Structure formats: C-alpha cells, structure tokens
Image (cartoon, rainbow, N blue to C red; front, side, top):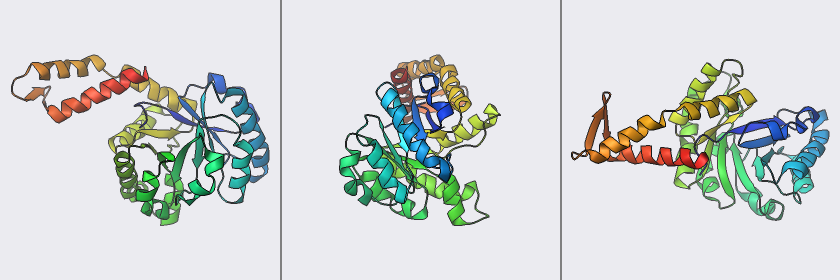
Length: 266
C-alpha cells in the first residue's frame, strides 16, 4: 500500500514541463497524455513523454496516464521498452486488458483509474488482480455519467467501495482531483476529507497542492501522538483519556502505524 502522505502529481506531457521534472516537488509524477492534451497535441505529447521517461525514468518515480480507445495500443507499444514506474489506465472497467497487454506491461505498476459505474461494479475483480497495484477514482467522469445534477454526495458510495476493495486487497487508493489551486486552506480541507474517507492519497494537479500536502505532514504534531502512545502504555486500565478524547488499544495501534509510516516516508 502507498506510504502515508505520498504525493501523486499530474504533469501534462508538454514541452514546457519536460525540463522541470527534476525540480518538481512530488513523490510520484504522472505524465498526462489524456485530459490535459487536446487531440492535436497527443502525438507530440507521446514523443515528449517518451523523451522524459528515457531521461528521468530511473531517477524519478514516473507514471504515464494513457488514453483509452484506439490510442491506447499505440501509446503502450511506443513506451513498452522504456524503464519507468508504471502506467495509469483510464476508464478501467475490467481486467481483460491486463492479459491482452501482459507483455507490454511487464515490469510496470498499473494504476486502474475507475471513472464509470461499470468500473465500480467490477471492483472486486479489478482490485484482486495481481498486476494492479493501485486504484484511483475519477470523480468528474463518474458524475458526468450519473447526470447533470449529480454532485459530490453522489460519489460517496462509489468512493467507499473503491476504498473498501483497495484495503481488502492490500492496494493503495487515490481520490479524485481537487480543482482548487489558489486557496491551499480550501484544498487541504478537501485533502483531509479524502483521508477521512479512507483513501491512501489524492491525485494532484498543481505543485502548490503537493507542497501543501508535504507541509501538512511535516507540521503534524508527532511528539503529541508519541506522548499519547507512551501514556497509554503506562496506563493499567486499557483505556486512557487525554484532552477530552478516549483511547483504547485499537486507537493506539492505529497511531503507531501512522507514526511508523511517517518515519518510513522521511
């Protein structure tokens, strides 16, 4: 499963971003060949992505979001011999694609981007497939399928299902993007909501979002949490109250796991 606080940033496969890859502050970069490129830009974008992967694929954790449909085969075949972390497959609705393209996908992590009701229904099989390492939710396309009036509330069941099956199958889960790139306080409210829903992380669209997530975990009061663990371990009752909150063993184990993941990330 993904490390806590890991940042996953979409970067358009465009020339102006190609040379910035080493400086981008994100744990994982997803070069985007899909939504951020117009149809006329996609062919150039594929060449730019290939060049970026050749140059930085072994020094940075790089993924590529491919296009669905007729371009999928072309893009995957163009990149199959380059060493890089993995691919994000959009409109993922079934695992047949894994078998069909097993040779081209060998050695690469797969993130299944779930964006349709069919994808949600297929989650038990998708999440369990050994070639898939992570699940991501595409909220905009999912709401579009549901209809004009569908808002965030309409996504809660689908997001819960994705978190459930990802957790059960020991895969990481990434929530849909937030379009807030100016007000980081509002963005972090959205990010924390994703974490409360149980997601491992969140897909990001701007370096400012990645910096905000990093600062959030750097500023988290680890000493305070360590103090809770220490106090509980000295307590003979098996239950502890601190600052108006009660802690039992399951809470303490959760805190310990959180602290361990923070230390691993650093």
